[in-house]
Amino acid sequence: MSELPKDIMMPNDNPYALHRVKVLKVYQLTEKEKLFLFRFEDPGLAEKWTFRPGQFVQLTIPGVGEVPISICSSPIRRGFFELCIRKAGRVTTVVHRLKPGDTVLVRGPYGNGFPVDEWEGMDLLLIAAGLGTAPLRSVFLYAMDNRWKYGKVTFINTARYGKDLLFYRELEAMKDLAEAENVKIIQSVTRDPDWPGRHGRPQKFIPEANTDPRKTAIAICGPPRMYKSVFEALIEYGYKPENIYVTLERKMKCGIGKCGHCVAGTSTSWKYICKDGPVFGYFDIISTPGLLD
Image 1 (cartoon, rainbow, N blue to C red):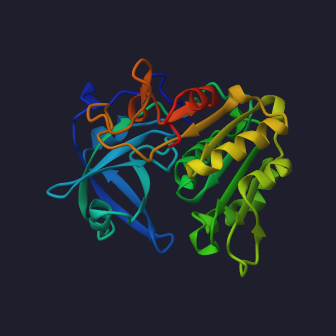
Image 2: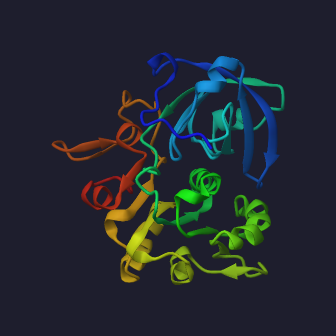
Image 3: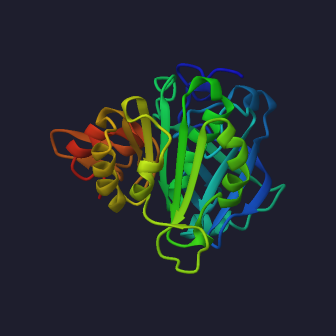
């Protein structure tokens, strides 16, 4: 497998550069979310463009607007990338009308991404709720593509209702192979009494993880209200706070720290979620007012 470069740069080092991409496939994941597979129109760009799990792009629809979206595919698979997009506003409503063969524009990648290089040799515990499954899918697929680099892996995937469990079928189909590779997949719902599978919030399943708390990197993404209880449960079970990471996307707009829409903190110490993040460590989260608002 190819390695991720130490410093990921945008082509021509121009943060404003727009690149045309073609829609290859569109999958309806849930009532509100679609998965889009894109390919760069420029073959040379397709060969060299890459990203880190946890980074995002700005997806642009000319004449309509742009929206920041986390990449949910593995960076090992060059030339293509996937975005899971929820229909939630003017731009994403237009995006949901796209069909294979249509083209749009992207710029990026932006943000810091997860420190997957630093995690080599560690176990991985991924905890997702709702749309938070999308960015963590990138981490999961990257770990599967580079299985020898990491120890045991547990992916806890949750949603309110079974119909909203993102990538449910994909993850279920991987279960048998995953178990042979010391990878555990747990999927659960919290408000669906008719769901035949498991029920419970993410923290309920932390004791079932196959990971060693002493040497595990944790990646979390979901609604901000879930973080406090998940943090408390992780620390209670012996996971180290310095190994806990969260990705935040809810307030990003321009992607490069110019609009100020995603600033959090105080007048003397602030952070831009799009530039300093969107991935933050536990101690940044608890010490920066507004990051989880």
